[in-house]
Amino acid sequence: MKNKKIYNIIFAAVLIISTAITLFAKSIDVRIYVGYVLIILSLIALLYSAISVISKNIKKNLKSILAFLAAIALAVVFYFIAPTDDLSIAVYEKTNTPIGWGKIVSAGMYLVYTLVGIVILALIYSQVRRLVKK
Image 1: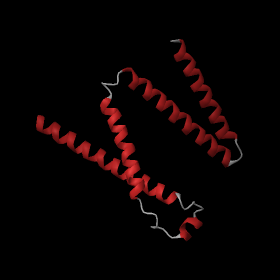
Image 2: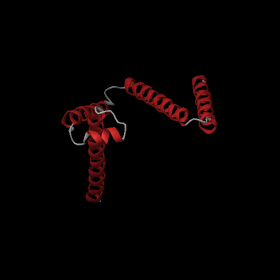
Image 3: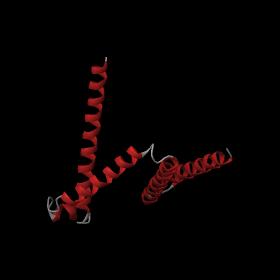
Image 4: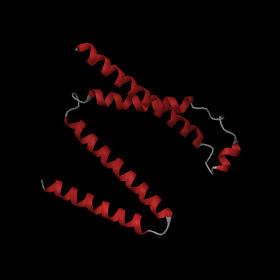
């Protein structure tokens, strides 16, 4: 119980500090960096929480582990099949984007499209299954 209170106090302090910086910072760069830090902190908290829950009962959470590994495998596959020459150099220069990021962005888009498709198919499947059971 004591740890939960400490976590809540830390969470509130980070929230108040980040809100104050976001509201009162003159530079947009500072606001962007605060956003980056908050995203990284939330990812660390998410990973810590997921690992602590999964480590308590690995057999029960095996499907979740396999789904996570499948998503990582999909990301790797999409990275290798993503085109490298789909945009001209002028587009990269116009947007100040390094040339190497084109492949990463394409792979990310493929991954998002695929995961959205999987979610839509899962929703359709669950609704049809529910109708068939009735």
